[in-house]
Length: 93
Image (cartoon, rainbow, N blue to C red):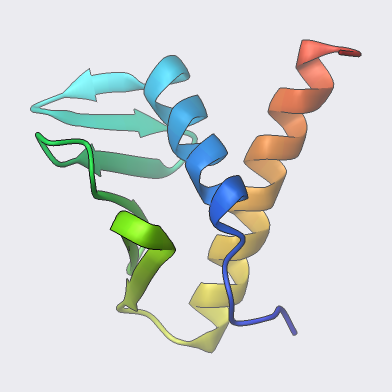
């Protein structure tokens, strides 16, 4: 079972990866099953995959909407894998 809390540093890195590598369609970035929407002021964002949506706000506050426990676990694992795969492909720092 995956912990319920999100590592906001990892979430923001994933959002950056989705934005950089994703395809922009109607104001939404799409990449590897994730969709990213950002507010116009840059203070909030939403990452979604399947039935689950993670809304992130200023001061590292967030809200998770939709889906069940298994969806949350899958979402967190896929988000972590996205960041790990990106780091692996980038090579050593």
